[in-house]
Image 1 (cartoon, rainbow, N blue to C red):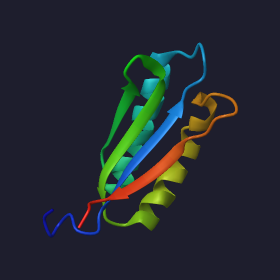
Image 2 (tube, rainbow, N blue to C red):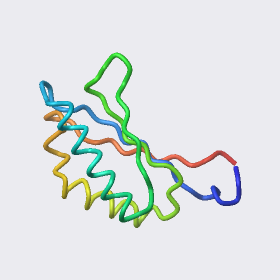
Image 3 (cartoon, rainbow, N blue to C red):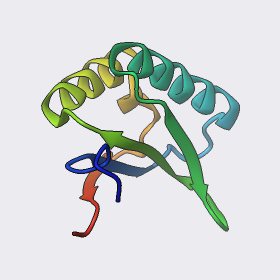
Image 4 (tube, one colour):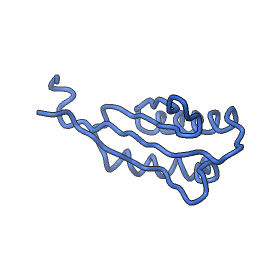
Length: 102
């Protein structure tokens, strides 16, 4: 780990999108949200889907230095892009935060 990575947090956000959703539209919505988040925070996200299960998606954001500011920006952008409308009913976006081992 380099000195510049010390104390940085890595975000892994996973969820299931609604059954029978338009995946192209959902991807475009998530990527637009990620673009807004990158503009606010300087952190570019990645979007992935589970192998063999294209309804389970994961967003990854790495090297977040200011968790509080990032969490606020993430909530603002998720709400602005209405991500809750993409999520399977009864489910939620699960946010996991990890740091490098010492």
